[in-house]
Length: 336
Figure 1: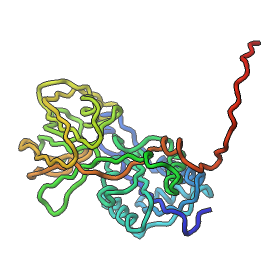
Figure 2: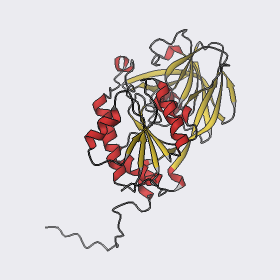
Figure 3: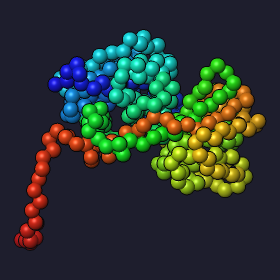
Figure 4: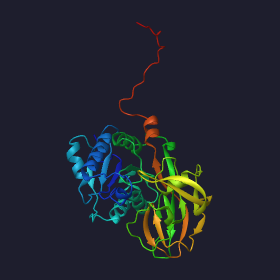
């Protein structure tokens, strides 16, 4: 049973993730309130299967965590709530992450999409991060079974997984000359339109250029274009200029496949400062039009540590229920 000296795990659930226009222009799913609450309940149940932890959660505007507690009943660790008054805004996640960092939490679990991760990283740039997928593209968020994620989190929070169970994410800092610097965890994309509109990106002809920090073969969105150009080395980002040239077949969204023309690309190490092209009118962060064009610079920086759930479970020392089993030679196969 968790005591007051048990490690603290942060939990931030975003009730508005997975509800943008890509449900209309593609086949993106809608993760409704009940499904998110069920997901969180499984996550909490998984935590109880590991060594003791305490959970410090955002009391989100839709009451997702409270619903999850009712669903899970007695199969949850102790849960307390942050002193953050949720307003159903993106800033809820950022403020919650700031408080978790100040509270000495060992890690933060987010339930949402790439935008939720972005806001959490803005609040806690060097967090140990476990992002559970409940968004649209989920280029960074993980889609492992939440029960398994919960167990991995409990093991990691208690120091029972090795350092190589984590990998460092590269983030992108966008400076427009305003008072604050915006953050992206997947990509920064320049588009030629003059308005933010429905925010989401799905039309290749709008694209001017992109800086992509996190590339994997299964990526969806502009990161899928970068993935089609080959693997990206650790500590590097990929700059892509769109226009006549090579054609890349990309997954621009769930159920949305398009051929995209790439004029040029190059891989750049962290710390390099890039100036966005004058043709860029709006800057999109992680697949969403966010910033109306201003003289903008993008810099790749070391970001949070991302937990690998399979690696944590594979190597978790002291995992409950694990016993030593003697190896015995298999007998001959007997056919009847």
